[in-house]
Image (cartoon, rainbow, N blue to C red; front, side, top):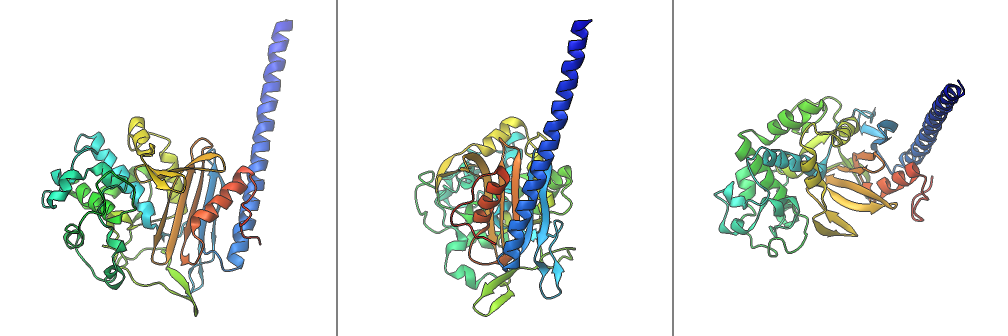
Length: 371
């Protein structure tokens, strides 16, 4: 009888402890959410931030809110469901598509690119898909040439875009070092299309967005009517202005997608599962491969670094009028997602570091802006 009473008492105490821990966690999350909101609101009030922010931990939202305007000409505010251009966050979706095709046995990351793009010059014989994924191919980035700014409005085809850089001399021996390269991810998009028989955007829709229920993500074509699309802006000496037009065929698999903070949270949560690829393939995607500077290593479409003494797997993006960042902290099951539609000095990575510090109860960097 005494033993039974002890078991009942122990069970009761354990239940009480679990309830107390749950309440404490909820209170801590609410407190962190308030602090995060106050911090971003301060930046928005000072016209230093316009966009949407989502912060989550342990599968629960801590903050999900829009700030500033999605359209300053019509005074339409940003919300968590506002669609923003992602810029180079696109690369992680391109990487996922490549790894899905490898998992199906349709390619290998060790394949030379000429195996799948036979019209590419002989220099491609020494360049593998792995080199493209890790920005270590030596191919000059088409966004780094002087004529890029002049030709941003031109609707080039995929073949014409590749023709613009394929014959340029390599900047270094493939695999020798890291140099950020949009040309490499453009070629990955061409490989996806060649192997799958689908257009790049159709492949992502069929094999990533639809399976995950990401209904507010896709290829940003300005001709399409897209509800809740944010306009892109930038600051100039004269004040806020509309950003320069960019034909969206040019970013392609390196930076063409749009999404919302809510959809990117769905993406983040899916990466803890095997909904898209097996665990072994996910491990391949997130394995640090090559030094990319600032104490970080590049994986496949992601950068791996240490932030606030925690492992961070993230990536930023910048495209006309927009700057973005997604930071995943897998050991803490936490994520910080920032989508901005006004360009100005001070990128989203610095803001991400500040928001992560608030989330984890760490001191803010001394140079962090104050309200």
